[in-house]
Length: 120
Image (tube, rainbow, N blue to C red):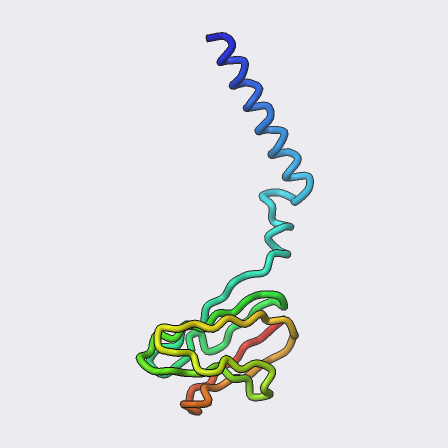
């Protein structure tokens, strides 16, 4: 029994050291690491619209368009900096937002569908 208690104390001490080292390297709770990690954002295509209508992301983030309509759509930047091609019904398209700027985009199959991607 005493050997087991000794092992538990060692494990607790080791866990505490790992936590302190993590906080020293990454800040409290790892916030510094989270600020640098690219994020994943989802734009839903449904009922002939993009939701959200305006999405703000950081350079390096990934944006995924999910088509929940029963027919294809596109996500095509007006300046042609990105173009999904046809996103099939129940399909998705991924885009890594590398260049900063404001990108208005449309569905080339349904030109009344418009939205904006802001990359900071």
